[in-house]
Amino acid sequence: MVSVHLGPAWFFGADACLEALASVIAFFVALASFRVYRLTKERKYGYFTVSMVLLTLSFISRAVTDALMEEIVFKVPAGLVGSIFYIGYVAHILLALGAYLLLFIITHKLADKRVIALLFLILIPSLLLSGSYYMSFYGISALLLGFIALSYWQNYRKVCKLAACLVFVSFSLLTVAQILFLVESHLELFYVAAELAQAAGYLLLLFALIKTMFK
Amino acid sequence: MKRSKIDIVYDMLRAIEDKGGKIIPTHLLYKSNLSHQRMKLYLDELKQRNMIVETQIKDKTFYEITDVGRKFIQNFRQMKEFTQAFGL
Image 1 (cartoon, rainbow over the protein chains, first blue to last red):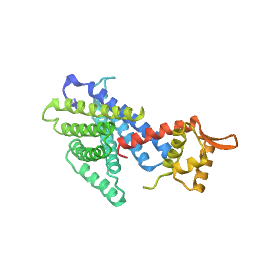
Image 2: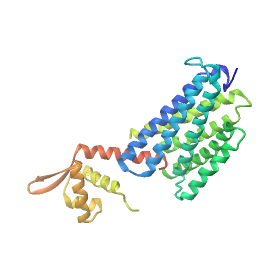
Image 3: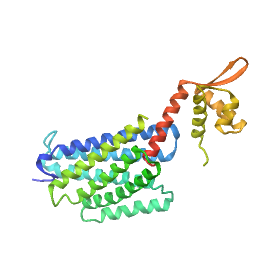
């Protein structure tokens, strides 16, 4: 019998729902960004849209995998559990890392293509040569999101607007969530806290989006 | 800082809106901070995109903002808010 569940049993289902919520919010941000891209035709909005689409797909993959693992929709044949877990989580990891890296490049306004290529190339061995994809993914994500949050702090200091503050707090919460995911193997409740911090982060992102769209 | 094309369009439309939706060319010229030649190019494009209409009142030319132009101003403001919030 293969067991690939994460977190306490009473939380089964809730995590998949929170991940689905994150994917819906990322999709709304992608839509808003695409609208701005259509208006301006500026590349940075295009890249931001791509980053949010990758994040949406990443969370869809994770939510579906968790829902299947926790047998919310239907019972998965035992022989397929391992494969579904592997495919679902690898897709989640690759798509999320792509999204975070793109977001890091945009927020830090990196223009040198050699530096960008180097970042992508460093990412591959850091992930593939690691003993645990799961751990190295959350380690790299925490670093990237931490730097993105730092950039949003500087942006908030510059523009002094509530929406910018919400975006900064949102990415700070997402960073905290990655750190909690890293240590969840020590205590199951860390997994719950990580999922809640992540959902709170995305909800704040939604509030920031609403604030900008209803100006 | 150099203004982008979209910034200039916004400045022109806002200048018209600030004047109650209707403006004479001379006022638009100094409010949009453009040369006469460049302003003419922008005016042609705005008319082509139905953002403004040219009207004649007592032999005087006026440029009037349309609903399309007002919608553009609203979208531009949202875009600026989005850009500032997400640090783009």
